[in-house]
Amino acid sequence: MKLWGGRFTSRADEIMEQFNTSLPVDHRLYKEDIAGSFAHVTMLVHCDLLTPEEGDLLVGGLDSILQDIETGAIKIEGNYEDIHSFVEMHLTERIGETGKKLHTARSRNDQVAVDMRLYAKGKAAQVMDSLQMLIDSLNTKGAANNVIMPGYTHLQRAQVVTFGHHLGAYAQMFKRDKKRVGNAIDILDENPLGCGALAGTTHNIDRDVTTALLGFAKPVDNFLDGVSDRDYLLELMSDFSIVMMHLSRLSEELILWSSQEFKFIDMADAYSTGSSIMPQKKNPDAAELIRGKTGRVYGSLFSLLTTLKGLPLTYNKDMQEDKEQFFDALDTVMDCLEIMSKMIDTLHVNADNMKAAIKAGFLNATEVADYLVGKGTAFRDAHEIVGRLIIYCEQQKKAIEDLTVEELAKFSEQITEDIYDYIDYENIITKGNKHLMKQVGK
Ligand code: ARG
Image (cartoon, rainbow, N blue to C red; front, side, top):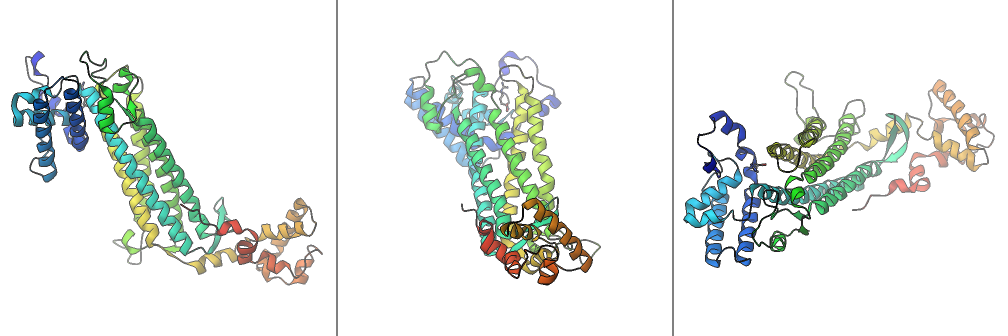
């Protein structure tokens, strides 16, 4: 069942049919394909290229196909080359000869281009919503558990921070990701319908009509580019890759924090799994899968970049490969955002363990140096003094704040009783470095 039999005298080989068909993948473009056709028919009538009666018949037929797909009355399957052939052939079957006029002044090249742009635009907006959902989860969990915890560099305990500020760092990343996806939408928001196969059409069409009906910001400026541009998919997949990289970093921390070594959090049972042999195990599989699936999204991006590399203008069948990669990356990022958001909502914070980890790590050493600076010592000298103090603490197996003021004063005579207040962990955050208490906002 082909749209182009006239020039051929023999059938395609069965394996070629299977190799060539994109229906098992592009069936999900049915709504956008029919929306594009609605706009195209309306424009053809507007430009007197179809009669209003023909227009009504075509729109009615397309509408009945749409309804039947949505209700499940017809399934998108069979021996069709792609979703465009499927819809057009069903249309002609239903309304007769007039169906054959649908494709006037159109090619599948501008048709698939408009379908994909509409689809990508709609789905990118959903990704932005999912990103906002995760940002909200991070902010809510952080605000409800804004307890002190160790902050790390080199995965070594460094200085005291708050759990809210730590989760807030991720909220910032996802806020930037959301902005990036929004920028990608702005760039892709152009209508390729009317570019034809590559060179427009001699019919007197009006691209502004389809542009307005389909809700694009403007028609594309160049026909050759309009049918061969897939940059917007690469751009979205780059954004998805960055989202996954951020999700993967967060996953890694959740995995570490829920280990017996850290015990900073407990993950909800709903997002964990057990072991078939070790009865005690509760594994953070959801976080591990997100970390793992990051590679899959990067792979999709690189696959399409490689497919497009070196392609001459304009349309080449290679481009049909864009869909599998884009759909897979999109599905993966959407699932991962939802699961991460639910994992954050349901995790339990072990504030006492976070506090105990601070105590064991000399996380107020920098503040001792800052205290000495406040008393007139140069910072580099203060750093040296505190370094020696830490060696002493390690030998004594004591925290800095557990030493007596006499012991402390041996390292600098500027140290007096007020040091305990200055280097108290809660005080560091509530009186000193107040910014760490701040939430990130929306
Ligand atoms: N299935 C095709 C694709 O996704 C549709 C466009 C076909 N165009 C063509 N000239 N054969 O790219």
